[in-house]
Amino acid sequence: MRYWIGIVMFAAAAAFVVSGVLHKRRVLAARMAAEARGIASVPPEAFSIAAVGEGIRPLILVFLTVTAAMIVVMFVLPGGDESLSLLDLGGVLAALAAYGIWMSRRVTYRMSDIVRAEAATAAPAGGGIDRPAEAAVGAAGAGTTPDAGRAAREAG
Image 1 (cartoon, helix red, strand yellow):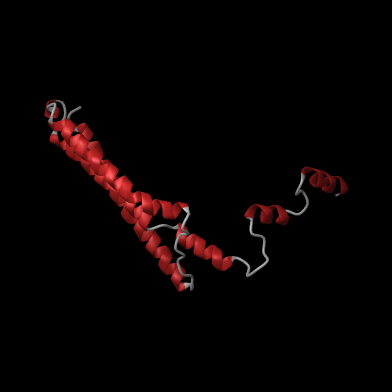
Image 2 (image 1 turned 30 degrees about the vertical axis):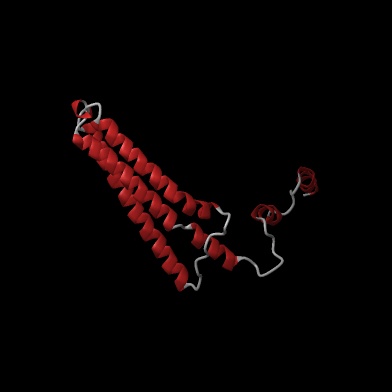
């Protein structure tokens, strides 16, 4: 079991970093495409999930740092080098650090800002249906209630 944990954790760390970099590229490309169409990114509202993510990110990073420190202490004090290698320790620490980088990239570069901006520009300028479920039901025609749908089927 020695060395296997470290190898797997370094692979997971690499996957986190690659995923974070690819996500950042996708979001920046989508932002550039939206700006080329004249759509500006909309910042998150004060009480939205995106704004909460911005506030919780430092707490998660502190938690990851404390967890990494506890792992190092638990490795060094009871003589963890007898059952695990320094490669294993390094792999676990690298996976924690890479997760922190990945999570920060996901919070910093959000697609929801672009989606919200595109939805705001596509919405009718006043008086439209605000709820998508009602719009879908209204577009379907008859059948807004079970009785109306049954009546429409019997009539047609």
